[in-house]
Image (cartoon, rainbow, N blue to C red):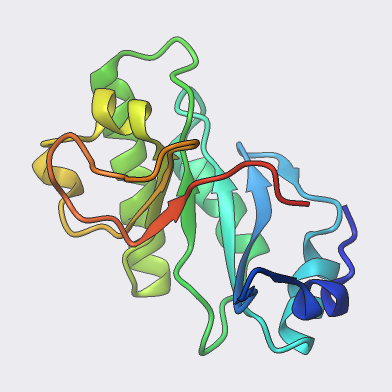
Length: 168
């Protein structure tokens, strides 16, 4: 949706205030979020650090998805690295999911000059990326709700923990 970024900037939950946001940019090789451009510009104008994410579909060409994201997202100094959101297999094998995700991430890294962030939920991470040398060194953003502690099955580090899905 079209977000009121001035309101987001003023929000305070407990003593926590928003200082950065991730904005959906693209999905697959064809979909661009209808409000991406507006939200991208307005978040920055409110002084929020911003990042863009792509909802990755492992059964669609990683190369076509990378071209689509790169056409859509122009990063500026101070922006967060691009995010690869992978949450479903879509009929692909474990190996295909890993191979296609890695190819997509490599293409983004080559273009933007920074390692993208891998976003997924804890169980998907456990079943597809844990203990995989090809994914070591990538920043991790893990969704794991209604728990007081996040630990990954391979004891790797995470940089972002999405611990709730109820924010609006």
